[in-house]
Structure formats: structure tokens, C-alpha cells
Length: 160
Image 1 (cartoon, rainbow, N blue to C red):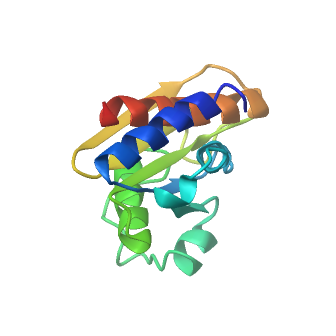
Image 2 (cartoon, rainbow, N blue to C red):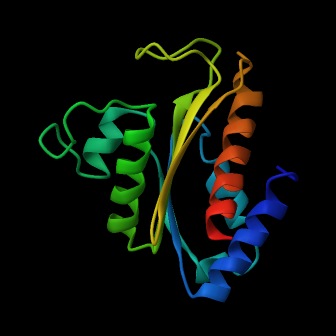
């Protein structure tokens, strides 16, 4: 966690400087992105909230998504899905930015054919960007931290 907090602090400072905020949707990082952001003093100024969207039930119940509201042809753990979910969480929580992480932490892959160590990050706000990371590792905890770091680093780079 100690390696994530300095990145989160720089993100917070940048958001304060810009008068912006972020809302987070994460899955395979299990809340580590949000935990790092919330560890920064003053986060309530720029952190809107989050959803750990680990199952379709959460997407339906908490975020109100249905088959009809999902864009056709996208699946979880993909860049288009990460962008979609970043937009959903930004809209639901009224963030300037939406940040989404979705992947397969391990020790095995996911039902979509992605190997353990696969994650996609989507960022939606004044600009949009998406990224994919393949760690090649089946260590669940190591992947969760790698995914959180990747998401935070990508977001920091987009804010630069």
C-alpha cells in the first residue's frame, strides 16, 4: 500500500489544483485503488466514491445496469468495457473523471478467456483513454496491487 499512496497523493493534488473530482469503479483490484486515494488527507474534496463491481449483480443492483443499457458486443475485462464503466461511475457519482479497472487477478483466468494477470483500465473525463496490462503472473495478491498501481499511474499520466 505504501507504494500506492504517493501516486494517489499526486493525483489528489492535481485534482485540487484543477478543481476536479474522480469516481472509481474497480473489480480485480478489490478496492485498492480507492483505498490508496482515500489514504490521502483531504480526499473528501476530490474523491466522489466508488463501486467494487466484482459481479454482474453489483452492476445491476448498485449501478442499475441491464442488458439493455450495456453497449452491444462488449464484455468485462476489456478496454471498451473499462471505458463504459468509467463513464457510468462518473455519471452516477458526478465525478469530473471516471476511473475503471477490470480484469482477472488469478490464480486462474476469467470466463472470457483472459489469463490471470490481465487487467484493463478506462479513464473518462475531459479526455478518454484506455490501457491493458498483462503481468503474466498467477499470484492473486501481487496482481491486485499491480492492477491498482497500473490504474493509478495511468490516471496520473492522463492528468499531467
